[in-house]
Image (tube, rainbow, N blue to C red; front, side, top):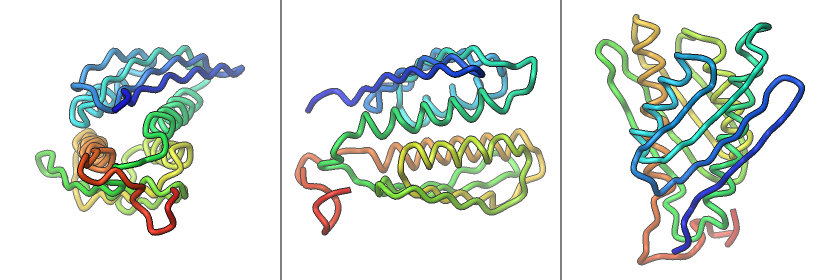
Length: 188
């Protein structure tokens, strides 16, 4: 099987991003977004998904963090879409629950080719919801996230990122005994 690696470059008036993703990696991350908390979330996303992720972003942080967060998610989604290719042999679906101390989050993912995003639960950070919506749209996938409960905002967001990483890991896994496209339509 060919390596499932994708590199994406995105340069706008607001951001300059270079991202490389290996979805069959070992969880190594080299992330520099200029936003410490986002770097932390992407590091643990790579670790828990066993994805190798290299990211460099220079954004207009003097204005706010929104442009960088959204554009990084767009690049990450595009990288997933490019790396998985025709999806032959891929599980397609992934589901995972993750506890983080008092918080519990769930992610259900479907690399269907049809973008749709649903989030339920308290919003501890509006940019995080924007991140996952942009990721879902650019990866052309269904992404359903639910924060079941939690009080500590950091723990809640960490549980969401870890659950997403684990669900993605399950969804992109290849079953070598069935290398067909996981759809009765024959295409995704």
